[in-house]
Amino acid sequence: MPVTCDWAQFCEEVNFDPKQSQSLSLSRIIEQAAVGAIPTTIGPLVIAAHLEGSGDSVRVGLRATGPDGSFAVSDETDISFEQAGPYLLITIGRLNVAVEGRYRFDIIFDDVHVVRSLWLTILQVSHDSADRPLGGA
Figure: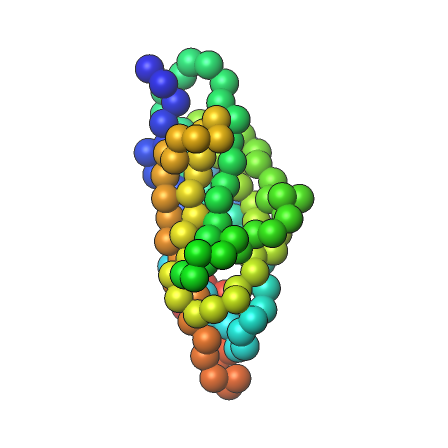
């Protein structure tokens, strides 16, 4: 059975339970982000994903694009990948926010197969309300 990605979620932090190797805790789930000014950068962000299946190893990549089609991560060194058991953790050190709107993140296997797409809405808010947490909650 080929390796697939059955779910992925943005969060600010991921913790593993040392007593249960298959246990994962996501902290501060991110559904949207609020920023005080645009253009800006935000981060770090973490994408936690669950992988299913087995077989040949795959190369994992991430493509992040803004609502205007521009690349939102301009330097590959701003992205790191870690696999722990069935979980894949993708850390984005710095995300370039050029415009307000929905940003698309594609998890890619072997440079061609998009296995999961996530969307993150980034909103510009007035300076007073920009002190809210990254996740907008």
